[in-house]
Length: 523
Image 1 (cartoon, rainbow, N blue to C red):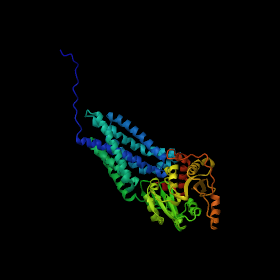
Image 2: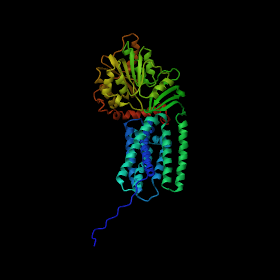
Image 3: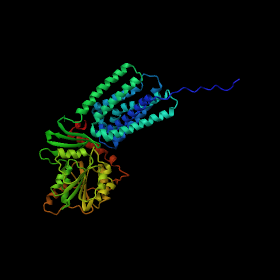
Image 4: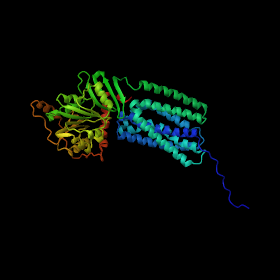
């Protein structure tokens, strides 16, 4: 008699066919790429309105991680249950919700604006991107359930799904950042991505034998979104007149959304990058209109005989022309090639020295000459690039100054004592590198102002030329005495400026809307 317990016979399994692998792994690679592309494009959707800052990135990353977690959970729950909602539905609704983002983004951001910079950006990101990321997150659990239904090696199959999804994310990130974004607008890319997902949903519906009516609905979405994408690619790359404005030039680059906008009623031409005005001129005279430039263009009076200057942040290039009138040849560094192009084509910028395109930290290290004057004028997206204001960066600029040379730093902030800490922090950081400092404001009596710091290793004094008396008389009410005590030293390791400048960023956005109009912040 056989007393041994009965043994279960091994379950018959089969390996996934090559076609099955193409379907499953292709699905997760495409949806993985879509996740990262939506995340990255999110900064271009809400960046022009809220500024591209740590606040916006934190909002997008938090929303993305939360939405994916919800998608993973409910995708797993639905995958194990015999419901009508399956993988093709998840991909289909991801396509639909992505296609809606360009249509509702403006209304959503205006609706969330009363919540302020932090919660406005977070709420906008949550409303716009949560739905599509939840559906994209569902794809992985569905694919794992389908792929492991008929195979025994569940662990290796699940690992392969996650690995290939991650590789797809990497591919999507590189494809978007290296190739697509500089060539096409955000809305066009979103619509093409939606079209690709709709086509994928249609193919999955056929593969899984989903009801015919779903396939027809998916095909209808493919046709609609495809038509919208073609229209965007052909017509959406350039804007037209918007509420009294005429967009003359528009280009989306790695660094921002650059536009040249005419305001005929005021005869003003604006150069904008994301949510910042980085250049403005009178269309009749061609003279620069940004208030701080009236102070900075007088810099040669503090350094008689100056021959060479360096401008960090080109803008519309007006300062180059201003310095040329004093016989000063100016090299310029500009991170965004579209800004340099716009300055030449639309603001009659005529270089008097080299124009170097690239990040200032990198380019300055490569410079092998010294200057009499350096102007640090970097402001974009409603915020300063704070890595350019650290003690280390200021020290690097000092090495490019000739003995007795002057560094001028433009910084936006408030003049009220209770809001002066960011300005004091810049003053303290400059004082760590230079023995002498003078500070001016662009508009006396205005609480929100451009601060122009002039620092040197020699006393910062006006020329003794008789004509300098008029300059001294004009500058006198603009001199602003700042005690750096109470400020925080800004370093590469510790840089709290973005937090300290929160109130400034919110106020600047309000000023921009009042000056240029809310519609200018949207595509």
